[in-house]
Length: 420
Length: 211
Image (cartoon, rainbow over all chains, first blue to last red; front, side):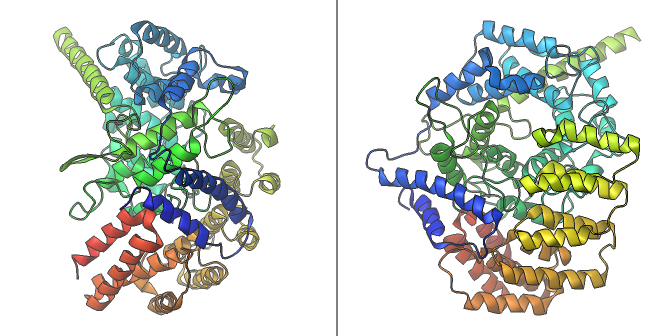
């Protein structure tokens, strides 16, 4: 197969396909598809000059680094989400192989410490009340910073208090609220499960009693998952439900695996190659991860005799075509770099993190047969580091943090025994 | 405040709490409709409407509301979900209701055969057992045979037919259906829906082992 034939085939599908009926849905889809197709066509027309996709690594590093230092007035609305910005930027840098200095790491750790609540957990900023999402983000940032021996990062966490916080937001039906008196949905369950697993909490079964039952009820009639039973199926909630079940070793609770797989596979756009969040909605690069990241997780639930050995069930190359050709933001003034949801939109750290995370998740295929890398030019800058799809940090960061906290647990156990 | 921040989780939750305290959901439907004027698919508004309808037992008119929205835009997944949700929580899925919803979704497929939502709904109404309605499925088999379309508008039809034939193969040890299904999966993989080639190849491989 000649290079980019599949991209050309997707362009042909665009040319030959017309919606059966014209509605507001088809109008917005056509507009987006048109913009993406124009960018694809530009690339195809200039293949003699540039033969391959290009990831503007240096620009993205500049953009993400800026996020770690100071933030402009546009981010005021995210004042309650500062651990998120720390995670989005440090994770993006990590995927691009940037190593932070110990000084920088210390600075970040000091900030995260200020976000830790005296009641346990992390809030959106200093003196804010703890919230499961910001706790998840803080823990992921800590995992990234602490990996490779920088234990200062792990030492931030008040494990006992964090555990208390998790119990304080647990509901009797197995679900979790995002914060005390906050909304309940599967994001909260996922955040709790991710954090509890990183901390290697002893009584995970007790903390997550009935959680698998609740998650099972969140599977919708079309195979995807919603935030709560009965809600519309959606990428973010499908990922969080699936990842939570996997973290709890309870994927057997999924009521209908084949309709989940069908729904997931249908989320990849025929022409654009990226993913949408729900049926008949627009492509959005953040779903690179929220949809794309589910494929490595669900792969283990397929019939292993027939599941592909050197690819996931979706089309990794098509995702890269979309991300590299249509989502990298080019700017004339100020710092270029970063990713937007789709052509014409503004960039932000959230999309930068998740556009890259999705590509990272789908570039590397691993199973008991070995590992395959799907990349325009393996060993090149286009190739990102691997991630652990359950937490969305590097596999080594996961191993290191698990090791640290399980060792701490052992130390604590020995102390208890010697004291009794 | 809600109108200016229609995608903020906290504000919606706060509104929900206020309804609880006041034990009053009477104004909520109208409020969500204001939001729908701007954005037919606003996720928070739909969640809120579902919560209000269930919490205060305000199901009356909801099924009709969902159907009206599907007349306006048959591709509106939120409306399809609302329809399913309302039936589930009011009349429930009796045999009669399944029959009438089967007619409803067929009508909608006549309007637009390229609508993933309608195909999903069709599967759900049959409890994901496609051989439950063989006459209906055979109609689709025939339709697929005569369709002339250079694009991929009929990819969901092809997928449904292939899945139905695959199910038939397993249930009846029907080799002919199996061979036909594999042909369709192959066509999907190579021409009709290549972005999902790994998925079509997977289904084909699973089925081939059973023929």
